[in-house]
Length: 333
Image (tube, rainbow, N blue to C red):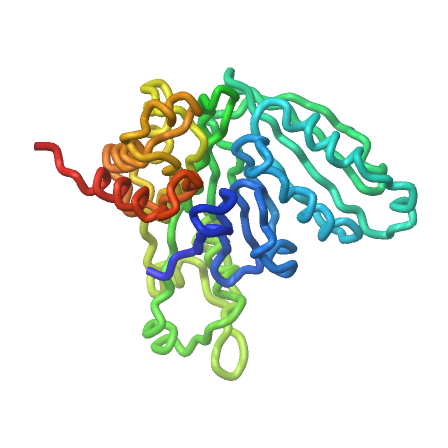
């Protein structure tokens, strides 16, 4: 199948942590962590709609400033998620700058911040450029099933982990993957085009089979029922799952939360800062070892792992990747 999500590391594995997920056929992207994002072009960052922060150590959060710099002066909304305290921290960052001229802008850049709590609740606040980024519309809500985002195409769930401070792991899940058979398009005299995106959205939204769809066709358009198109043109199968885990102690309480979140992920981006032989150092810094990361991925039935967040202690970071992969591939004897 042609995947909907195209995830990649923002930096090399020994650089600041971060994963960019771009969407197939859409100018849209999600970011997991906001460390150094200078490798990403302004065009790419302008396509980001949601950013998910694990915690606010500098290497995970300093890139918020560049992202905000690009979005100010545009009619854009950024949805930002992260650990307890994030609302204040975003406010402090924005308050560090002078906004005496933003009232002259016709565009309004808005940041909606959601910070998470261990009891399953969340606090929300808004910052608008037209209000000189004063905090407004503070609310609280429950987060059922730890689901932060729930759109027709995908959802994002989270787990709060222990890094001596709260650190958040995330899983992005495509609800269903819809393949359009090219040979069936030809047989029905239909053409490719934006209408196929609308067709997929209608299927994911659960619209009635009697709904009429304006389909692209040779020489013009045709009105066809959604049910006919579903039967003859598409194949529906389980969607992708991409998980992101970083900056978490390797103890069992964390392990159980990680395993539940990443279960059956197709791709797992997971930190591997230390070798197992340096486990005492990893424990003292509340990080996973490479071997522990690989073991958790194996136990969770993950399809593929992408190690990152290498410690500068290892000039050759490939030793970390090899240890993680070996633990991932190990079979119980």
